[in-house]
Image 1 (cartoon, rainbow, N blue to C red):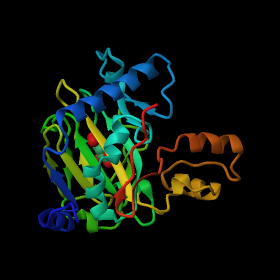
Image 2 (cartoon, rainbow, N blue to C red):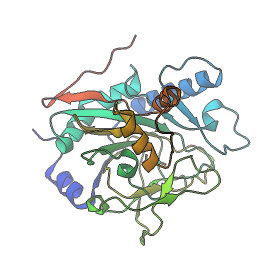
Image 3 (cartoon, helix red, strand yellow):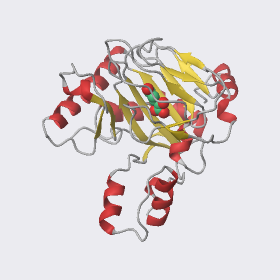
Length: 292
Ligand SMILES: O=C(O)CCC(=O)C(=O)O
């Protein structure tokens, strides 16, 4: 039985995104926030945080005192037992995404975004530009952990742009921008903001043109973002052929030497954020990893 309603399906086809209000309860949002804050603090104290990748904000607010106030994003969370994996495997999530991607689905990317006070947003882009996967119809699930308001850096989207091919981009040269951000420079539209309450979920197509604006408020605008793809998708970031990895990174503007020295390859592979984890097989959910 499909989980998307006929209306949601029609909106998805037309706009390339849907919002599901009140998707997650307060305790889910609190658990995601608490675990991510704990990871940030542990990393700050030099403790082992396993596979999690903590990315500092390039220009944190100078008055930031707590570790999590200096962090932009935390990646590689969905394959580790805990609230992030529980969300990635939650039947409500997996069934919705499965309606869009089919019976066999993996979660391949997770990021908790703090968007602390003063943090810059991410300019207009399509996730498919970064992913370079075949096929390229991945689905993002953006859960509002705190409210996304006009002033704290909500997402903005261009409805219907999921039908467009991948746009040309230029590097994002703003001081304080995260390394590697790119921008679709000649968009010609302002798009529409997606204002959300805590617990609301946005599902969006990997070709959807979107951005987020800066957080000009005092409080963080936090979101948990998961990305899903059909099982068997070709992901150049995890292709065992080092030539494929080199070509992929070159397209993203990272030039590596050829032939690729083993030590350089090891560093490049350690930076890969994607972890392909089955969440749905044959139309049935795959259980989340159990806590150790
Ligand atoms: O949440 C944000 O501020 C930006 C997220 C985004 O655009 C993305 O993950 O592709």
